[in-house]
Image 1 (cartoon, one colour):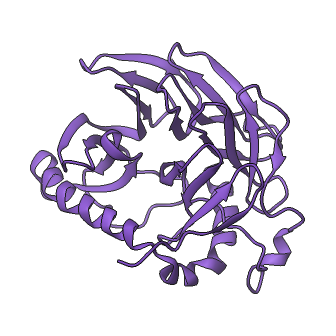
Image 2 (tube, helix red, strand yellow):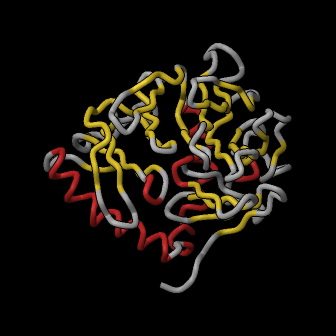
Image 3 (tube, rainbow, N blue to C red):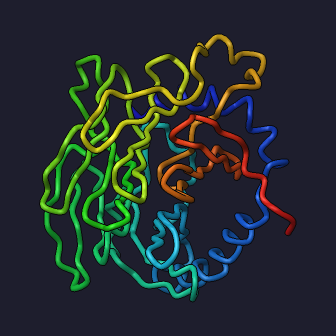
Length: 288
């Protein structure tokens, strides 16, 4: 599943990566630099000099970082994901604290005062402030994104690999109830849920071009927001001006309000998407 979706995403991102350096928002660069200043020494102290943080999950006081024991000597294949230990990083203070020391997780997100931890086999558990774990769901593919209230999260669900629907988008509450919201042919993935807990945006390759779709927590029929009318062959030789790149991952998304989603489109280039109108544009930002 991951390999096929990455292939689709890489094709659509390749043509825009050369422009990414010109679209960097200075505020984002400062954010990453500040995170490195706190995380690099803390990770070395807690996990040893070979350990590195390679992922940031979320924002603010609830931000988490994924740590690998060491960087692999050889590049990993697209279906191979390094298993992570998890630390909490507070953007406001720079404080770093170990959440899960074992190198056994693919993703993690803060959900209220708890932390959702996705194991390598697709088992999703939640860990409370006392370090106690409980099972939430199995067969979770990743792309965890919590509600603003911290009472649930949306995620990519793994479907039957033999069928036409490889993944679906689902809502998982803290009682472990799972509701499928979008399940189209091929891959539906990378979901995000609005601050009011009603609107769910995700990425699908059902038209051969990775595009944003929108639904809601009732599972209303999905509506295509971006790249309407585009087909994969139209991207070769450079994307048309109306092309909107997909996000790198759920973990680089943040809602600016109920209607506007901000996301990383690759190479540090952030975009803003209005989930009501489908209008999208690069978020260049102001002066350093």
